[in-house]
Length: 616
Image (cartoon, rainbow, N blue to C red):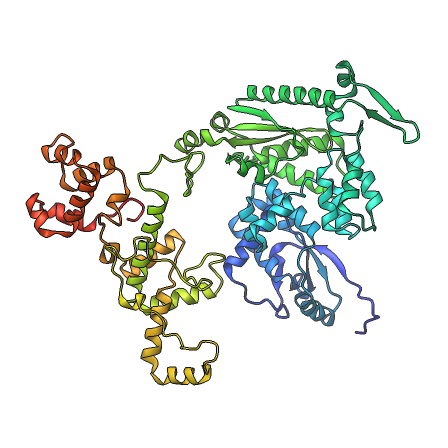
C-alpha cells in the first residue's frame, strides 16, 4: 500500500459478544486494575474513541486497535450489566472495519506507535461529564492517569459554552485564550468575542477587556433570568446601539439587586421540597472544587429501576431517537423514563442535606442537590448516609492533650520502631522496594528514596529511645567525595562478599522505611513484628513533662486502677507537674518504685505495653 492509496473503510455497530481480540493487536496483556480503571471511565464518560478491527469471516470482528477498550467493555458487561440499558453504545459499540488484512495490520501498529494524549478540549468534556455523573477529582485522575491538580484545571473550564470548547478543539484558540472566557457571564457576548479571537493570537488582556464592557447587554444571563420588566420596575435605565441592534442596561447595581432577590426567592422555594437548607450563589457553575472548599459532603440519588415493560419501551424509544424518528410525545415519554433511571433523593437524604441554586450561562435556573454542610456531617454519619473521614481538622475534632510537636515526635518514634523491626526481615524490605518500583503505589511510597533522610529521631533525641546501632551508625563516606575513584571503591566493596552487600543494603533501606498508607503499614508491622516499646520508653523529658497535669492525673489512675478519690490518686493530683512527670517516669523505668506502690502483674503488663493515643 503506497502513501497515496485511499483506504475504503466502513463503520458499523456490533454486539459486544461478537467482538474478540485480534492476534495482531500489540496489547495482548494488560493489568486487570488498568482495565478496571478504564471501565470506570467509560461507564461515567462514555466511549470517547471507537475501536477498529477486521471481520473474521464468521459474523464477528477481531479488534486490531482498541484492545484495552474492548476488555473494559467486557468488564462492564460482567460487573455492571445495567450500564448497557442506560447506554446502548456499551453493548453495541461502533467499530471501524478494515477492508483487508494489510490495512488491519497497519492500523494495529499505527495506533500504538502514534498514540497521543487527549486534546485539552476532549479532557475538559470528558472530565466535566464524569464530574456531573458524580465522579470526584481523585476518581477522574485515576481513570485518566493524571494528577488531581491537572483535573481541577480542566474542570474549571467545564462550564464554558460549547462553542468555546469547539474552537479549542479545532485549534482556533489556545488553552490560555479559552481560560479567559471563564470571566464572562454573557454567553452571547462570549460568542461575539470568540469570533474575533479565532485564528488570532490576542493577548489575555484584550480578550478580557472585550468580554467585560461597561454596559450590560440584554443577553447577559442575569437579564435573561430576571427579565427586562423586573429590571425597569426597580428604576433600571435602558439604552441601545441602533447599529448593533442591541439593548443595553445602564444600571448594573439595580440589575444585581433584582437578580439576587429573585435568586434568593428561588432558593427559599426549594426548602418546601423537604431539603434541610437551600441557598443561592451568583456563580454560573458549581464544581466539585467549590464543594470541597466549603468542606461539604455530597449525597447522590438512589438508583431508579424500570419495570420489564418500561425497560422494553425505553429501548424502543432510544432506538427511534438514534434514527431521529421520535415525535414530540415519544421524546417526552423517553425523558420521563430517563428521569426514573436517574433516581431520586430519599426523604432521609433531604432531611440531612441541602441545595445550592444558581443561574447558568444561558440564564436558566439550575441547582446542585444533596450537599451536606460541615456542621451537619456528624448527624449524616450517624444516619449512615456518609462515611466518617479518616482525616480530621482542628474544627472537626476535640482538642487533643498532645501538642502537634509532640505528636510529630511520637510519629518519628513509631517510624523508628518500624525500621528497627524490619532489620530482622531483609526479604520484606526488598519486597517493599520492588513493590514501590513497580509503580503500583502511585504517588505514595514505602521507602523514602527521594529524600536524604527519613526522620525517625524526635526532638528529644535519644532520651528513652534506643535503636539498633545499624540504624544510627553513619555511612562510611569517602574522605574526598569529589575526587575519589568510584570504580576502585566499587571493586573493593564487591570483594567484601554478598553477605556484606546484603547487610549494607538492608540497613540503609531500613533507614528509608516511611510507609504512609495505614493498611500497608499495619501489614508491614505484623510481618516485621514492630514493637514501639522495644525501642522507646516514655520519660519525663520525652513525654510526661510535655502534656498537661489533668492528663497525668488520669494516666496515673488508669495505670494503677485507681478511682479519682482514692488516697493515692488525690495525693498524686496535689503534686507539682514536674513531680508528677518524675513519678510516672519511675513507674515505667524503676522496678523498686513499682514495688513501693504495690503494682500488680496485670498493672505491670499494662505499663510495659502502654503507648500514647495515636501510636498504638
